[in-house]
Length: 333
Image 1 (tube, rainbow, N blue to C red):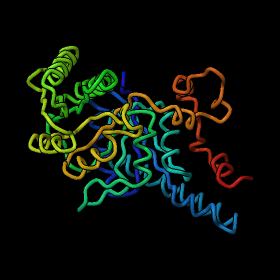
Image 2 (cartoon, one colour; image 1 turned 180 degrees about the vertical axis):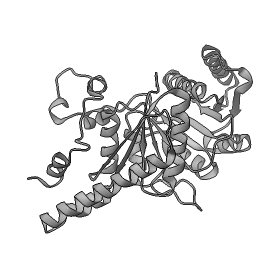
Image 3 (cartoon, rainbow, N blue to C red; image 1 turned 90 degrees about the vertical axis):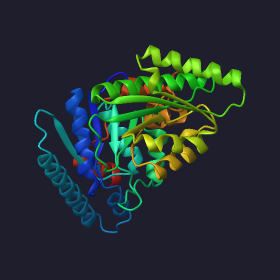
Image 4 (tube, rainbow, N blue to C red; image 1 turned 135 degrees about the horizontal axis):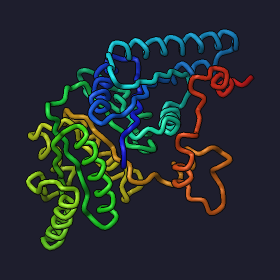
């Protein structure tokens, strides 16, 4: 994240939306970003695709979009966003993950904010299939938000992996994004690394690399926390007493495809910690980049899919508020 001027806020129609928008407004006011308040009824779209009566389905589709648009406008009005531009848009399409990803490209989002679909007052954050898919494929940084109010000033922590050269590049991306967001929010920022190596020389070398990274981004070494052990066993215990408001970590790693961090470890941290999470994107897998491109742009010889994706960012139109286009995309003529 080299800038933060556009935030996509994905509302679900639940009570969690108010806390979600409040945090987006906090960030937008501090950094000067604009907000795109967006909602998609993917469940209705799925059910309407199996409707036997096209006329009734079209009416239900229009009514659903109208109701959700009215909800977003009431949410915007209640937030009193003085000085902050909030665009609202509702749609009825699916799959939900794909719709969110394309909307993020359409509005040039630098950050997507969303409450997990399984959010529950007793269970905290709970991910469904769409959430896990979004964590893997979202083209920009993704913040998963729960309803706990941030401290003032907020406390942020970046989880980094200094395991090898590829890990260090991911770590630099995480630290860069964390520093940018923390500065804008006037938040403190700690760096945390759990080193599973039993070789003392390797641990010392990695600790020096982390200290060098901290100096490069003007972070105090007092905020560095290096612990020995498997991160699956150590991180939650290290983080919990520090009462962070936001944890930032790499959304994809170089190991085992879909993530050493996103997956088992993320699930463990979410279950044990009461904070929000930001999943920082280092580089999208090639198949994900191709999936976000228009079909005619997917197989150009010699083309780098991620470069092509960046080229079309902001020009990839889903159809958004154009009811006729969306209706035809769902149900044909």
